[in-house]
Image (cartoon, rainbow, N blue to C red; front, side, top):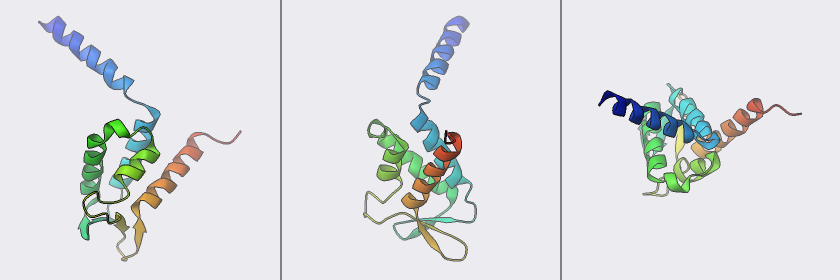
Length: 121
């Protein structure tokens, strides 16, 4: 019995690594950056949410649309741009009240991440 449990764990371990695509890694990095925004509020449908709530919401949307998300750009466009219910754009509100468009910010982060990961030749 223990050997079959070990074998299953081994198979699932390999399977989970097989799904660690560059797009998944980039999306996880973007979500980690959102999570780090402790003093910023995520504004969705006019209501403020914490960074942790924002990450949970974006992750849920990603999971629900996983088959359609092939790239980090797909994730931004389909999950981090606007509410699928109201169509209102997601915003990030800083302590001083300034707001940024969530998709624009994530797109900038993605460009920055790629630039630092792959230095010019």
